[in-house]
Amino acid sequence: MRRDVFQAIADPTRRSIIHLIAHESLNLNAVAERFDVSRPAISKHIKILTECGLVVIKQQGRERFCEARLNKLNEVSDWVEQYRKFWNVKLDALEIYLQELQSKRQLQTKKKKNVKTKRSR
Image (tube, rainbow, N blue to C red; front, side, top):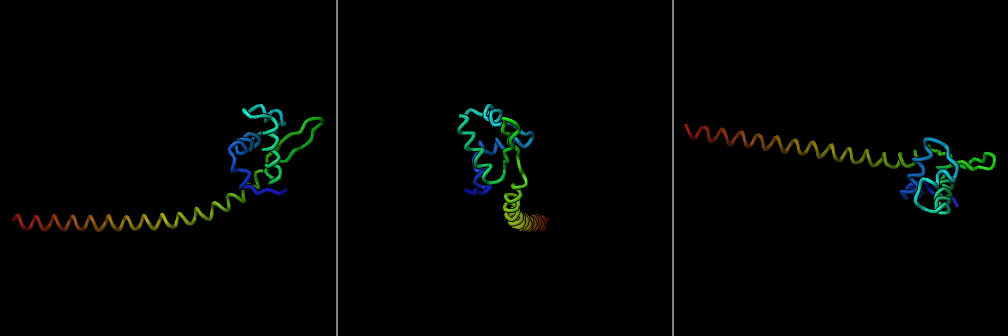
């Protein structure tokens, strides 16, 4: 079964595994030792990461090492980028609107001060 990257990164343990092996290739036992869950649970997490292409298992003698393949995260980055652009446009428009409101208020305050000054003369 081929899983998608979003499913893989949805779980905090899997995100931690990715972070851990992004810096160095580790064998399954070394990965499992860093977590407070069973080795079979870690194996299931690694299986999901492997199925979506974020982790590759390489056999070296009797050991199986996990290596991160972070280029698959570009799919997530591309998806997030479209929404970042959308929200940047919306927030820029809000900033312009708020500046216009502030300018109008300052102008109104200035006019009120001028009217008061004229009355007091």
